[in-house]
Image (cartoon, rainbow, N blue to C red; front, side, top):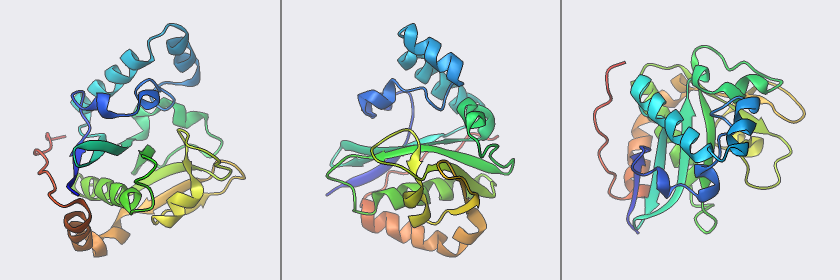
Length: 205
C-alpha cells in the first residue's frame, strides 16, 4: 500500500469527512458556533479558520492517504486560535504548548498505528518550530467518534494527565521526551507510510 502524510490546506480540505468539514466545534466559541450552524455557514467558517491560521501561524493539520484515499487527519494550533478550549473545566492549555484539537482514522484503517504516526508527525513539526509540548483535552467517557479525543488513546500515544477531571482531563506530551525518538519517527514514517511526500518549507514565523 502506498501511504503518505501531507499538510492540510484549503485544497485538500474536501478530503476530510463531510461531518468534519462542517464542524466548527473547536474553531469557534460555543455561541458563535451555534450561530454559524443556524445560519448554515459552518463550512464557510471552517475554511476561514484554516485560511487564517495558515496565513498567521502556518501548518495546522495533516491528512493521511492510503493508495490516494484519504483515511485520516489531525488538527492542531496554539490555544489562542482555539476559542472552544476556554469552555473546558480543565482549561487553559499551557502557554508553551500547542493544542491537539482532534484527529480521526477511517474505520478499517484503525489499529494499524496510523494514530500514533499522526501524533509523531505533529510532534516532529512542532519540535522544528521550537515548541515545548502538545496538550489536548481527553474524553474519559468516550463512546463513539466525536470532536474530543478519547483519553485512553492519548495515554496510549504518550500523553500524561496534567489536570485530572472525571470527564475532560487535560493531557500533555512533552516534546523533549520525543527527542530520543526523532530518528525513530523518520524510520517509522518510511516504514509505515511508504513514500512520504516532502513538505514545503515552513513560512518564517
